[in-house]
Length: 322
Ligand SMILES: [Fe+2]
Image (cartoon, rainbow, N blue to C red; front, side, top):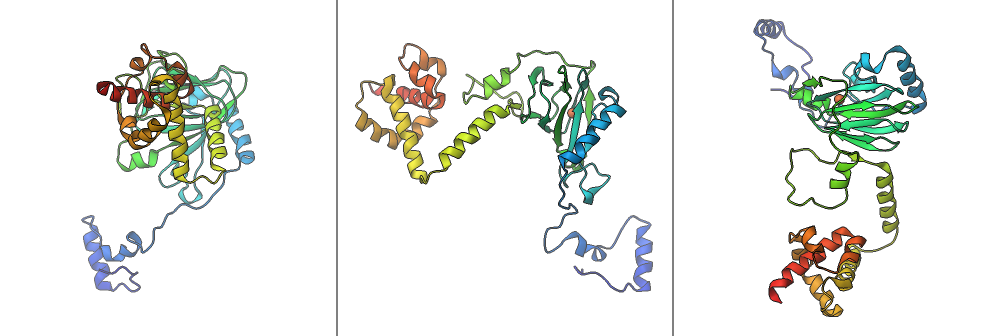
């Protein structure tokens, strides 16, 4: 076999190719250099979609078709190297979706997973598996594979977000399918923000058992993300080594410990022991209820749930010894 182009093809070979072509068979040596290349290759090309360019077009689409008629009123961002394939890259679909005031984008579910970044507008909602969240600019929302989702805009302004789906990957596996919900909108069965409260606050619900392989957290409000990133940025502007950072974390936890979880221990030996045994303590399972029953560590819990749970783990380890 040859991994280089075949410049001359003899009549004998051409005749051979023609005969085997009738049986849907082809010679690898004619295409091997294209199939297996020395370096990775992609048909994608670099491209930027300018907001100022696309915004008038997505708004114009709102005058041409309703959300109900379109199912999803989206302008697809097509990579110039993949025109006609509804792909922003070789593996991802992306598009800008518009929902006008008063409109509903009906409920459906599909095998593809989706994410969306809110780019413009305030006050519209997305519902995922029975829970609605109000969307604001910068929010990040996911609709995992096969989860019911619909959108509505009860606000007075249009909302636009960017959808991204793993459509090309699912297509590669011949696993594309969808289902429409019987009604326009799904029933709301959970309080708004319940998933975030339950899974988005660094606390593991007691006896938690995953109901699926997808994340139970589907809404990442920009306000919280921004706050976390700003805090990280401030914390990383210094010149602390990793060891110094870990030391500060340990000292913070020890401070919580000293504040009432085990007040009969002296602080200095305790700190040394904490450094030695921090990992087992952190790995030890404990329950939030157990920590609050009859203990005086409410201040520790209020300050930092993660540190507080680690401290409670320490109490459990020490109990059999005392
Ligand atoms: Fe969808």
